[in-house]
Length: 226
Image 1: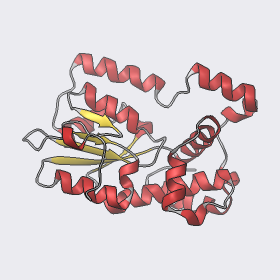
Image 2: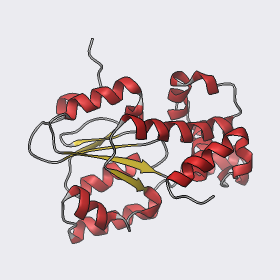
Image 3: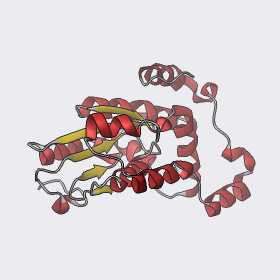
Image 4: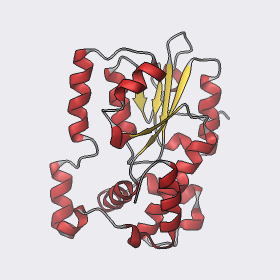
């Protein structure tokens, strides 16, 4: 039985450029789907639209192969979206407190060897391993740090996407950057009420335990200084 990925029936094999964005969760896949939509691409988040998808879970081996099979023969750009590790780890931990399911649950099924670790170290391992898997399973054309957006937009469009940035798209994308990864007021208030202000802080590298060394190594490859 063929693997089903949401929106597969909406994907179009035509002459229009296709874009596949992936990385680990909490790194900007939703943000990038909105950026690309503003630029005129029909891109879905966690599900395909006519021009591609922006999704963390397509890194899983069978899904990665299915995506590559789908876009074979197309003019496609693969983008690896990356975010500062300590910001992702902190965000992942907050997600675990306010959600019943998250990308960490998916990671637990695909990489059960890390399931007995403390939460903060599991989040650190997720950032390390999922980014390594993304780089290994796709031939990335672009390694994009979401921390550099929207400043990096010009090069992305000129060199890789081959598209113009109109004034309306620029305004829209600049506004997105101000709220990227932000908690909703409801989620923020709920977290603080249940766990105190401490829950909003960014974790330290020292708290990542034995995973800290690998976090540093992979972060350095992505030009982050910790």
